Image 1 (cartoon, helix red, strand yellow):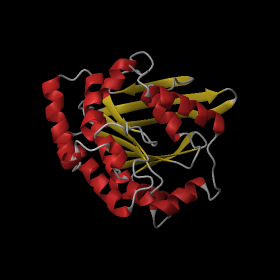
Image 2 (cartoon, one colour):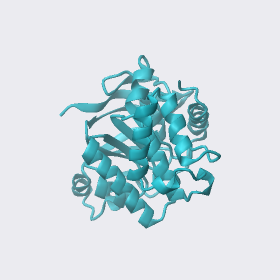
Image 3 (spheres, helix red, strand yellow):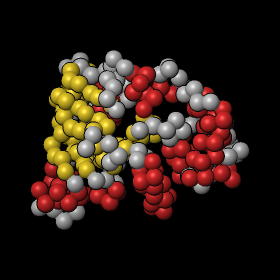
Length: 268
């Protein structure tokens, strides 16, 4: 099957620190793919290279056939993203957040208004369309961020720990929305999470990264068999160890800087 994402020998260095170390993987079009790893393993740095926010030191990337370095505009038009940190404007309404995003992407008024109505209905926020986002719960904000990321009909959506801090009921509903989008629109889903049961239940393929290197690939069942584990969480710990990890400050600081640039509109 055709690949939505192709990564070959991808490396990212910050000075002497190697955040991502010659990794290779591919993601099939229309699949749901989980990218798992401990804190500081290189997940967010990889996503930022895939989404044009960081340039690789070495290696090649293709996102929907485009090179994020040489063809950043084409790549940005082809994906949506939900960041780990909140990125909505809380002084705008739900509708205004989506409307602003649609204008930035050059979507015609008629098309974007229809799409906004469809997406607000999908994430069950139609009745709150004119309410300020500052009055939304965490789960409602996440649902709105997913709707915003889908507004321009992307072929891929990146979800960086989208359910972090949400209660189990909200997490379950959010994944139902994502699975419905995958089934109905054929959108490729690339996500990270620290909830192993989510990855085992939702993802068709999984890659595990640790210390900047991809150390395992396969379905949840395959990873459990490879490690002789009863659960994916046990398999993950067998692969990555039990040591508590901390974010690496040099990579994290640079990622935050790029994140702020994205949120401020510099990406256009």
